[in-house]
Length: 211
Image: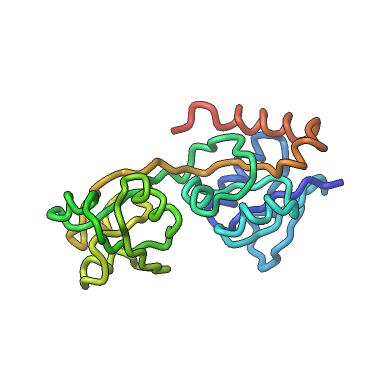
C-alpha cells in the first residue's frame, strides 16, 4: 500500500522533491510540467496529491493522505488534529502585526481593526492580549488595508519586508516564525509506524544544518 503525500504545487513541491531525492526516492515526476493532481514516484511506492496550501492539514487530518508538508503559518491558522514531526527549514518567514509606525501603541488598544487572511491567528493573538478587535478578512494585498483606511493594522506573513516598506508600513510586533513543516496523520503514524518513522528520520537528516 502506497504512502500518500499531500503537497502544494510550485516551489514547495520542488523543495520536497529535492529532500526526498536525498532520501533515495526518485521524485522526478514531481518537477515535470503537468496538470495532473495525482502523481507517483518512479517505483510506485509513494503517491503525491496536489492541493491548495490551506487544505493540506485537512487532507492529513481526514486520513486521505498520510504525510504532508505545509507552512507553520497555515498549520497554526487551520489548527487541525495532526502530528507536527519536523521543521524542514525552508520557506522561512514571520507572522507579524504590521502598520504605520505611529500605530505602535495601537497593538494593545481596544476596538482595533485588523485586516488579515489569517483570521484565526489574528483573533487568537489579540485575545491573549485582551484586545477587542474587528477582524476584516482579506484574501490578497492586505497591506492595502491601512493605506486606504480599511484597517488600523494587518496580520500577515513577512518575508523580505519590501512590500511593507514600499507602502510605508513597518512590523509592529512579531507573532511567531514560520517555515515548512512535515505533518502526519495520527492514525497512519500508529498503523504504519515502521514505514513512516524511518522515512521521517531520513528527511530530518537531509535537512540537518539548513538555515
